[in-house]
Length: 385
Image (cartoon, rainbow, N blue to C red):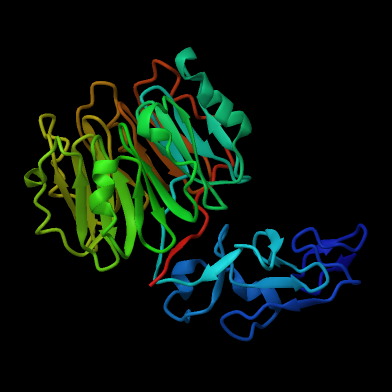
């Protein structure tokens, strides 16, 4: 039995490390990280939230998994992340200086008639789609290296680890104008437009009217797209909105929105989670979907057509609003780490990488009980200071 001297992985064949590709004949050196590292990679398996407070400017981080230690192959002019094994040329865009905030990625999503999720290997799972959306099935067969997805009612966006964006489904009009985007770290899908958050904290939107205002946004750490609006969360906890000309900004009074840590949008409705775990919501409330004033200890919120869902810190889920299809039947869920509210169904991602769903199932969009190995955390990304 041979153990790799770089990352301690064991291998019995060819004396080539399966994790970091170390070979005894190569000249590998540990890449500088936060500090001197006892026992090599063992001390590096820390999530971004654990080391942000001590990370200094200039520290490098793997774009795929957030790892902060690398093995450098001087002969091949390449490096390998010791956490996920990603190998890429040193001169390439493989890592960036640490910024102030991590960017949340969504590994589950759903439209009116389908549900999608990212496997741990970066490929896509998707339920059977109606014939008119057959290219969504094509995406499931051909998309790879995914770190995040976002769903409109009838289309799907996919963010790759290299910062490019894919689109499938009903992608007519401005929805599909994402091919030229680069260095994207987060995505959101509206009804007829797409939004992307860039690594430098700026925002791109395929709708020209919204882009006029969004071009002035700086230090954005999260985005959420609705029917004809885009919401932005800034690193200081403020929230701003841009709309198409057909909608008035007076409909959205955000003056009381402060200390916000998460946002969501759907159609003309918006919601935000405060640092203290309470929820704010604005929009059409005919089905009491915004009766969220008594919710506490919330870490994330999701909006469907007529219902709102909240994820509690303890992994349980609450819901309010229209429940004709059972989309609010989430009271028994536990160990949930992510939620997504679709048109008339609701998704919950468990800590073990399995998925639960409830609500409308006329197209098989809730047929996900056999899915496993779903990413429980998106690839790490960052916003620069």
